[in-house]
Image (cartoon, rainbow, N blue to C red):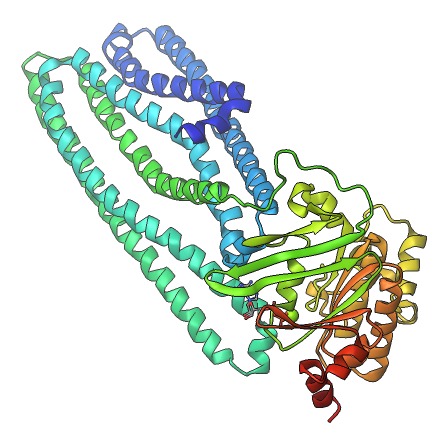
Length: 568
Ligand code: ADP
Ligand code: MG
């Protein structure tokens, strides 16, 4: 609760305006029956049209004002809600940007999208309707009861006996409805995940002609969604039906008793009408309670989900006295580095040093831990034991930003945004000029390709770069690196069987890029690393062999075996 109300803080004025208007509307609504009674008992018997018209104009002015207040409540109230929704969403997004790879490894994108959109929309609605509707509902009930007592104590007391029964019934069904909606809420996010994955993987689905399987999976998720929703609506129907009959039942009782009281002279006609009207008003809060009950669980669940992510912290962040890395990385050392994913040891007490400008190649069986080893350097993950140092200092002593600016990674699995080639290349340096972008494209061996495109560098690459070939995508990511101009380069080479021409172009681009930089290359094709300064053979998270090509060949160990295997 306290966590939630802090979001109102910047909008105190808006909140007071909205809340105050809502209270005013509530009070003036309560007064209408009394006005009616005045009309019937005073103005009507006077038979003076001037009074009647005068009274009507007065009422017209008052309720014209109420309609203005209602506008304020709806518009400015929603403004309050949307502002809070936006703030919470920004905060969540900002937090997500900081969470580490480990978090995203275990989180489905569809789920996160749901958290950032639907969940927060409900929070916005609650932020607006919550406090005001609750307050006005309580105020209306108390006000209505007081006016009833004021009109006629006996009739009021009789009515009071009936009302609690109705409230209890309503609350019972409301609670049922609440749990049903909570379940629905969970279902929406599961549903989002299913959709996100099947649409995201549509190419794979079609390639394997698994459309029917996906259709079934989708339909069963859709059906589960429908069933939960219907269950919620079942309780909602009970709720509205029982609410309705209870309301009419009470009114009819008041009608009968009222007739009796009027005939025996305990009540005037006007009071009778006013009493009926106020009884009707008494039921209004029940309706707004229904609305709140539908909204609250959604909003609360959304807020809980939000808090859950916000409370997810990461070890991978700047330490308190982190310094900016401003010099040149002369030595990079892995010192007894151990790393695990969960319980599984991936890197086991691994040590080596790379000097400035050195080209180190990592080879070895797939799953040996090469990619993982490289992802520790920009701190995508932190070692469990041991440390990585640059120029003798633990990389955790540097700010993440300055550390990551030193390192460029060309990943095996290239990610491109759906915009143009230009935007994707410029991602390496947002301030790059046209000339610099063209230079990078040239360096990455992409110039002839780009020149052949009708729209040149303004060609749209499609979602994740689907309109480009694998080799082209990889060269775009290399161009991006040229702009970033990092001192340390990590190349995770593609294993995909590229044609010789493309392969040669990528190799040429890699060679350009690694010129004069410290380079870690994960090589699958041994032909590409012959002239590496040092080759590390990584197996089961350990360095099994280390040395130059010639040394390792002479040793006739694992590297030698691998060479033989590739040349068969
Ligand atoms: P290599 O690059 O040598 O092929 P990786 O470093 O990619 O090997 O993977 C090493 C091991 O870690 C593999 O067994 C793989 O299954 C596991 N692994 C890789 N990434 C993750 C991850 N994000 N979460 C859990 N396990 C992972
Ligand atoms: Mg790998």
